[in-house]
Image (tube, rainbow over the protein chains, first blue to last red):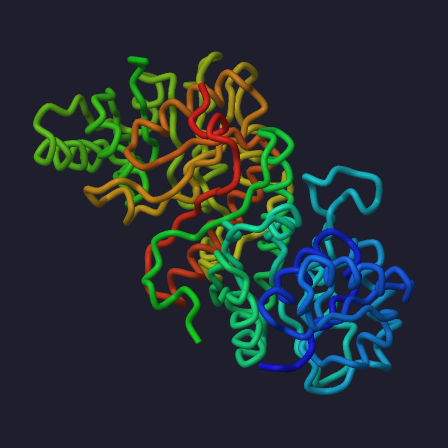
Length: 228
Length: 228
């Protein structure tokens, strides 16, 4: 899989962490930002750590046009407006991975609570805002930026939800390029609401217990994890 | 802690599994049921497996009067009505552990979806229905009956949520009497809504991947797990 991955909002800690991990795995990565210069600076920072990294930085819209594998790692308050802005640049066949969590912090509330999203979840809101032919996949909400920005294996499973089974498979294959992560098919996109809420629970646990928590699913047959 | 534990709805698979595990740990256990005879039969079944078990079976109301540590393991459709019925038997100082999940299956829908509960969660509904002085604690929603009904250690963490920190501690101590379980303080009762939804996710994973899944929280300092 040699298609470039564009991380929209990739200068934030979550997007930057994913960019770092995928660059290390040899993927071609584009960091997207509202500000092209900030995107280039972030890409440069990764190049300093991984000189062989195939990484560049571009304004979000340009990043979007250069890739057909997009990852949304933005705060919820910019979610709908970025998607509306990107719409003309989204081509059929594009996979949009949504890692957004509608934390109440986006309207001045707590990061350990979520907002109710009319469609059920941020990812389902995204599905409503993209043109036909674009597949939305919910994933990576539960992998904390601190886990990604470290060197060791990531102690977290990634549950992948989508109404497009092929797109879900592509994203599961992308997830397991990050050492330590196990990818699980979590079924339809409607289940994204649970993944998003788990993040709020993990943030609460982090605050209470001073850690960087993740989630592991136990008890499934080996074939369930990382199944192709 | 020698107070008897009453499992209301304890003839169902979840309640029976918890009764079995706590009887094995030497706790005094009362199985409660609408039907006293069914409760006694279930207790007898456990006695056959564990001859030394301190276990009995009683009608729900009598079980409730005989214990001040109660566990609700009933389908959501009976949740509010059982609580209303039990109200006169609930004394101040009682701890009510709510393991109920408002699965859509309770109104003919899917077990991999939840219903919206006006108060936020089944456990918060319980908190509204009990008399003053009764502490509601949300726990055990994510531990599947199949895991409990086996012999080995249970591969699942129990996240405990309550507005009463002392009651939360009592329940965490009770949880870790089951081998394999780690107990975590999950904060206030309002977080029960996330625990309840995780169960729907796990049921979906069980159906899709043919397993008996549980959840583990990674990445917290050792002191967070089983803290007294």
